[in-house]
Image 1 (cartoon, chains in turn orange, cyan):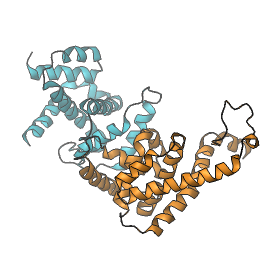
Image 2 (cartoon, chains in turn red, orange):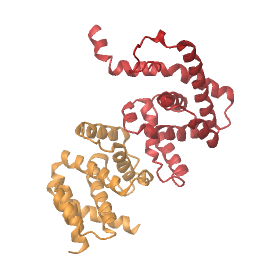
Image 3 (tube, one colour):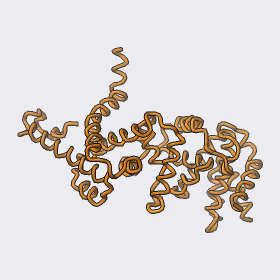
Length: 188
Length: 153
């Protein structure tokens, strides 16, 4: 996940890249600020501003942005439903989302929004069945339904902080559950 | 061939897994026959699903037993493991739940997508209950009955 290292670099030692450390820090901060500004605009239903900010995202940050949004989304979901949502409650939300979005957007498939919720609870498999490019749209449909657009800045800031913190943990967990799992078993 | 006969033969071929015959019969389809075929397939699927999720599929039953649905879906995912491209499992779930009180779930589905989802659910049931496939006439009669109720309501 180190963005400064490329396969074509003749000398991959991180130290050899000029100013790599300070560049990384400032660009990481700028990226985090951009993710937050974009999320704020989406929470506030300011679609024009959200679209403008999204357009300034660098392609290599797309995956990181998705991860940030997934963490934000997971939090909103846990706050509302806990880790084991009642299927009846979800079905109700799914119908509400369908009535709200489908009349304007005939591609809006409400069951995918519901599947995103279940994906961050205990059906992570569903994350592999919804195209990644579609995931943010469905997550925001859910978040905008569950978080009031007039939530305070402090409330949003708290959510952003948690999302930034759990992101790397989430990645590490996913990694351990897949690639690192056999190693763990062998050493246990 | 009368439309009724055409659709019965088409659905019989589908239940038997005879895709060549089904494709040949579809060559005789007129403008509205594709929609009719999906409705008839949906009715037959509803009949078959009653043996898993209880009576009244498509006729007012619901909500579905979500645990039983999750079990059904994970069986289906195991059966279709390795299929490339993979089936649209969420569409299958939508098609089934739509028959048990959540009809809005299939509104965004394309006709083809819906029909493939229904067919996956139907074949899952005929695999589990071979007598369904062994008695297509009986399935068709019941499906006809369900389709009529849909048409009239």
